[in-house]
Length: 264
DNA sequence: ATCGGTACCTGCACGC
DNA sequence: TGCGTGCAGGTACCGA
Image 1 (cartoon, rainbow, N blue to C red):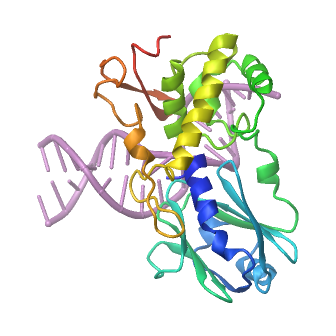
Image 2 (cartoon, rainbow, N blue to C red; image 1 turned 180 degrees about the vertical axis):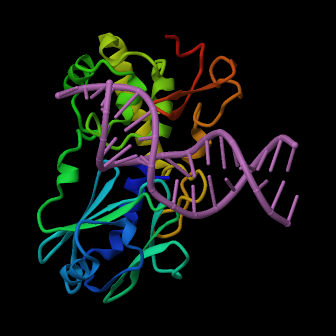
């Protein structure tokens, strides 16, 4: 489900929570908790009010007005829902003075963490792809010998790009997923930089990609999946040249590309 | 220091 | 109908 555009959409849809006071924090599955026992965590959260709700890459950081931070990652299948029924995969429930927030995650790759200080996991991330300067992006590319697809997925390089948007950006830039990052010339670096900004902006405007069951906190689906040009289109014709889209594995992840538009 | 492979979990589509 | 296989938006950890 959630890469930068989806997490951005979810974060925006959490707006109604700002100013609400947490009455009860209930953790029903401890696997998704990071650091610390559930009782102490709940005690730290209960009674505090929601301040800013911000996205850093694929992380959501909720600042509590009386101190502390709630860090939420949606993993592959995590959802945050404003209200609704507790289900089989509901792992946390936050009840507010008005309304409730449920954390649902069938694969349990997501996580919730409380920390008094600004979370180190977020501090370690690379820059936002929509904020990084081209010169810094190009210079960082030059320093890395790994394949470009792997690098785009590396959250310490840029934060927020996942498998869908890596493939879509590489297609728009005409770059093969196995191209070596340090060997991309300035023109190709520029095309990639622009393609990343373009695809992420379009996807945010579309409310993200709803591949299976992704919805924002108010249950709304995104529709950027209808604009995917290569992702999960293996065997279908390229929208530019008609050549069949191919799928290969790069660092154990599916990579979809057009063998004609994205030459090595 | 950087890189690639693997583990972590559940659900679904598919072929037999 | 059921069973096995492969695949799925994620990160963290391990060894080379």
